[in-house]
Amino acid sequence: MLLCFELSMPNNNSWNGKWSGEGNLYARVKNVRSEKVAKKLLAAESWYYNFGDGWSANVSVKETDATAARKIRKQSKGFCGYDWMIDSIFTYDEIRSTTK
Image 1 (cartoon, rainbow, N blue to C red):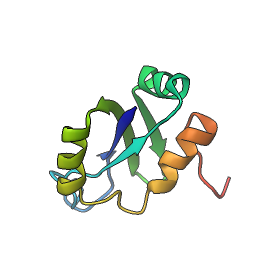
Image 2 (cartoon, one colour):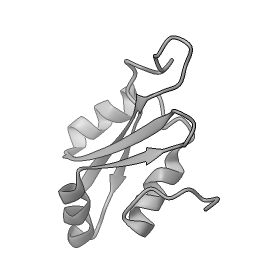
Image 3 (cartoon, rainbow, N blue to C red):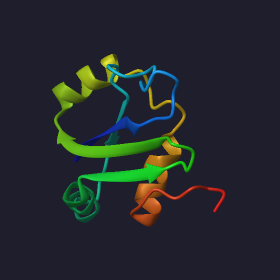
Image 4 (cartoon, rainbow, N blue to C red):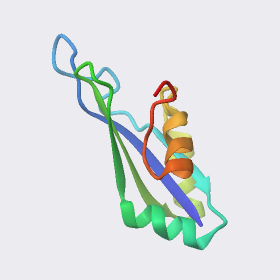
């Protein structure tokens, strides 16, 4: 099953109150072979992470098909170095800092 993980920064501590990446698509498409794992992720829908400095991230997930996945991969600007969040979701069912 193809799942699309999308990154957003709902809260930020920038000088103008905006994230410089706002308006861009930051997404990763993953092929999840286990239907049980995929259904568990889809049931959660999203995960929130507070950086503790006024910034926070949200990672949402949705099912996609191969045609939409190609379009997402083409339009995505990557995942801003936060791929570790997806790994954490798969490992811990939540976003955990690697320094905790």
